[in-house]
Length: 245
Image 1: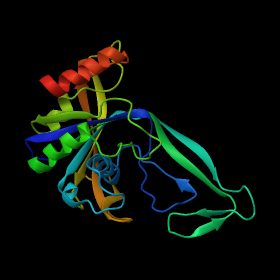
Image 2: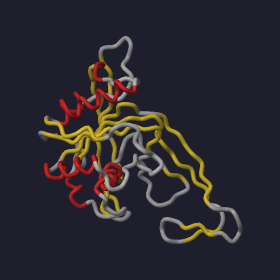
Image 3: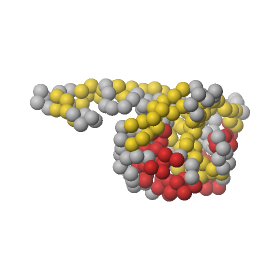
Image 4: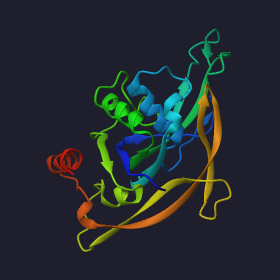
């Protein structure tokens, strides 16, 4: 991956959900890392674009994800409707269902991800400003999943590899270790030797998605990059990284 700058985002919160199954199914899944459709949707919220619109200039962006904290898989049970035999429940495809509709929804609890977005400078600059003053509130995959920390860490210069090797790590610093490890998810061409898995998360507008091929690698990072759990110190580290690094 060759680039000289990236817009760095931090996705951390009590709950996140990065699903890849389309439609309103009885089970809403989540991957263990943010999807391209979810990240571009996050950006589109800040820009004030309607849900389901084509990506437009956001399609020019590529992303790499560092898993700072994988979190824990959690499921929530939902019952929609069912108050009477006469009640009908609207579904995502425009039809209506009579009576109760049962769903289970998966989340990543207490997870944190550092996302590096690369692409044309004007797109990154516009997006950075929109994230500081979003039109619609961005959310971490589902509207019930708000960010818990400052998510816009600014534009930083260097390769994606260098940026992900120096950005703050949102986890507690280990007591007896000088390094920590983290997994990194990057986009690779089809049939690339480094590819490890594929997902249908490349938005094309509406409910259409293309397949994306990914590589999962592990990197070692200095333990001093960990921001810890103390809230004031954590926010100070994130602020310092954005404005003085």
